[in-house]
Image (cartoon, rainbow, N blue to C red; front, side):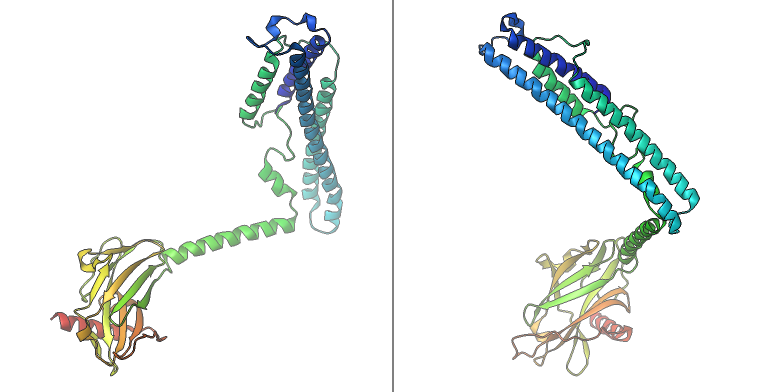
Length: 370
């Protein structure tokens, strides 16, 4: 709210209150224009209501000005205290003399501006109760509350203005610069360190997603021959899976395609391909989909169904491998296939295989294909 608008509202409320008081004291002087058209309201009730509304409007303006005045007093007190503390900062070595002089000058400017605004508030408070004659609007009495409501709506719709004449706030126009200038040297170092730490955290997050991201396989046994495989992508970009993967060269396309294969490790340590195993995605055979996409920082879930005659009665270990190229694995996962007599599968904590094991798996796949 600007001082100009406050002065306009004060003049308007004074006119409203004066007319309401005059007609309340001498109802016979009221004309038909002062009543709402077609209204059958009691004149005495109408005049009392208008008088009360005018008093409420004056009180609201008074509260707004007093709040502004109180804010300026707080600004003056805070700036004065900080100016007094400058000498102590110099003695403690927290601030140099040049920096202290600059700070003192800024605080003095804040004090002068707030003092000027406080004086304007005092002037406006005097105008509220002033009996001095002034040019006031002369409206039919019933139109004053309507116009007053319109003034309030205009005030609410006006954006805050930084031009001269706008209401003084408890902070300077350039709040960022003022905040920085109010900080001591140690506080500035702390703020800079916090900003740098935040940047490092954000940069580290992006680096993890786009450079250090990885693919993880989570395997869950549904029964002896059916498994749920969750392929988790922590990269910052989408990837795709080709399942089943037969060991051939992977297509070079965007997003990057990885091969997903399944092999069996018997109790004797032999590695066997599972050519009749079927991968399912969304309840359909995965090879019907082509590349299966995994969104960035997300996962895709597939199901693997093994053929009973490919699994020996004594069980073994199901080994799943993600290939980024022939004979180059990206990640592996293992889960134990229990003997036929056991009902509950167990998941041993086995280390991932190295590239030699991947080569043996790939050779088993290629021999099966031949």
